[in-house]
Image (cartoon, rainbow, N blue to C red; front, top):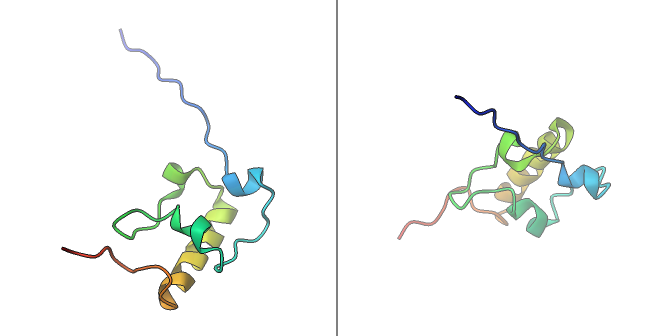
Length: 76
């Protein structure tokens, strides 16, 4: 018999905290949505809504351009 997997719907942390605009100057918050390899987490993993995921992507790209976040992970 196959069991159906039940999963909890992920909620957008930005909507829960009532943040309407993601600022690129908030490095600590944006860094938590980037993997250790330097990739931006997809929406299905992070649980963000589409509106905030687009803003987060723009913010991370701006942080990379002004060298507050790395483009790739450092190699040993």
